[in-house]
Length: 301
Image (cartoon, rainbow, N blue to C red; front, side, top):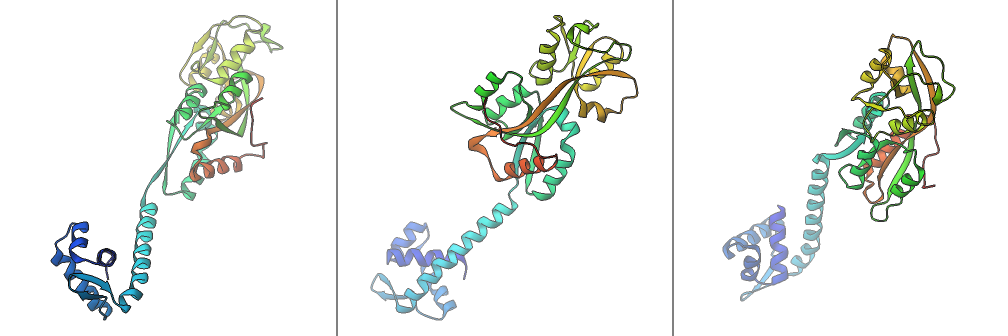
C-alpha cells in the first residue's frame, strides 16, 4: 500500500471522477483505474461505487478514507524527519585569533560531539569586521572583545534594524609586553620605546593600548599579522606589544619579558536577535559552561 496509490485514492474520492482525477494528477485515466483496482485488492473491499462515470465512496471506502489520510500524513512526517536527520546544518562562527587559539579548542570538541549534524565553520577576524559580518547576516555569531567606546558599543547593540544580542562568555587580562631590560611602568609616560606592535586597526585590544599609550606620548603603531610576530619584535627591542595573558601563557616563550596589565576586557558572543537558532544557543551554553560563572547578559550603557 504505497503512498502514491493512497494519494490517487484521495484525489479520486475528492473529484468523484477518474477522468478529472487523472487530469489533476497528470496521469492516464487507465493508470488511475488500475491503481484503484490494485488498492481494492490489497484491502479486500470495494472502495468506490461505480455509478456511470461518477465514483462515489462505498461504506468501506468512507472508513478507509480516514486511514488513508493518516497513513499519508505519517509517510510525509517520516520523510521530513529523515531529511532533517540527514541534512547537515551550518553554524557560521566568527572569532578573534586570540580566542580561537586559547579558548575554543575544548568547546569545539564538545560541540561537535553534542551536535554531529551541524557543521561549524570558523572565520577569523578583528572585532569590528566580525561585528559588521554578524549584522549583515554573513555570520551567525561572533566572539569579539567589547569595544572601549561604550557609546559606540551601545549604538551597535541597539541598532533599530538588526539589534544585537550579546552574552559575556570570557574575561581576558590585557597586557603590554616589553623587553626584559625595560624599566617597570607606572604610567604611559614611562615607556621608552618608539612603537606599539599590534594587530589590525579593527582590533579592540589595539584600540585599548593606543588610548592608554597616548596618555603619555603619541607612539605610532606597528601593524603585524600575528601575536608571535608581536612578541618577536618586543624581544628584539623594537616595540612594546599588546597581547591577552591567555595567549601569552599558551605560547611557552622562553625569553624574558616585562608585562604591564591594562586590566580586564570582556569577550562577548554576539548574534542578531532574529537569528538565534538552536545550535547557536547550544554553542553559547557550552561557552558559558567552559569558564567560571559570569554575569551573562549585557545591555547598552
